[in-house]
Length: 302
Ligand SMILES: NC(=O)c1ccc[n+]([C@@H]2O[C@H](COP(=O)([O-])OP(=O)(O)OC[C@H]3O[C@@H](n4cnc5c(N)ncnc54)[C@H](OP(=O)(O)O)[C@@H]3O)[C@@H](O)[C@H]2O)c1
Image 1 (cartoon, helix red, strand yellow):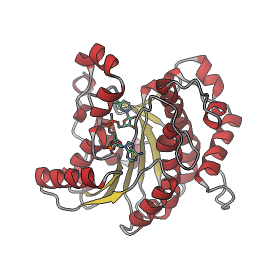
Image 2 (cartoon, rainbow, N blue to C red):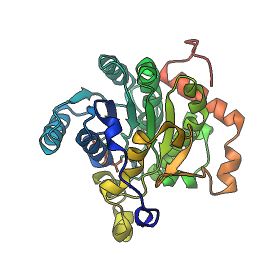
Image 3 (cartoon, rainbow, N blue to C red):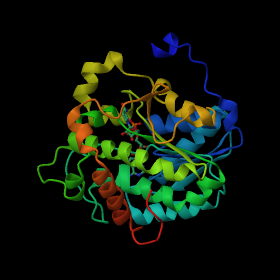
Image 4 (cartoon, rainbow, N blue to C red):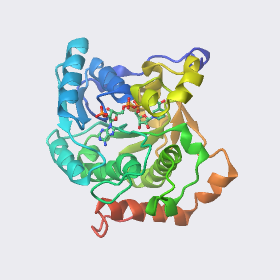
């Protein structure tokens, strides 16, 4: 509806021609569609995926449907820190990176902890992407990159809760956990982006709306049944990622939250706004530094 109401034009796809775009979680749903559209635009696309076989199948399908053969694979699990370090090493070989989309994600129904001792949702959506971004920062700087995080509107329901991030309760609720971590993503981006701006890296975060993906079908089947007629197509879901990746620099304020090509408020309720204090942001930054193993590496704080 907004597309028609505001007379949206196509994203400026030509700006991606020959550019290097890295997409995590690119074997399914939104990530796969982002990779397809970037490849169609002539970008050199790097698929970050945890499963080699699925990654190869996805690459073959993208190459044959778009005619772009410059599609590469980096195999890695973004929730596993050693794997993230390997991914970063491989990504560095591509040289300048122009676009990085932190899309990989899943909703975990029960409490699980990674071998790094981090709650799984937190590792996949927050600590892993934080580490990856830091490790390839020189390549992002060289590409004057757009770094785009895919969050969820579910985060509006949850406050910034560092106590929970530090010690997830054993009375685990996967939907709540997902929303809390998505909230932390939004705050992290706002806190971090200004430091990157002077290095010409533009970091933003976006909500795709509710989109009919394999992930949604699997994680929220009842929700999907109820809202099915309202769900977006993949193409509608990725529109704002495409727009953020291709629009002119002066159209994008770093650190902002986007939905449907517009900056949105980060809070809808006083309860969550009150949780988002400078002290909690500092705690969040320290949490990411410490959990990712980057603490004490003299990187400065934002
Ligand atoms: N669909 C929606 O309505 C909606 C709404 C708001 C936000 N989002 C967000 O959008 C993003 C994509 O979701 P989706 O709906 O497209 O889900 P999806 O269809 O399940 O796709 C998720 C992708 O992430 C990958 N992935 C999951 N965990 C990973 C890990 N540890 N390391 C590397 N890759 C991993 C999956 O790989 P495998 O193929 O190996 O499983 C898959 O490629 C997520 O961040 C999600 O939170 C979705």
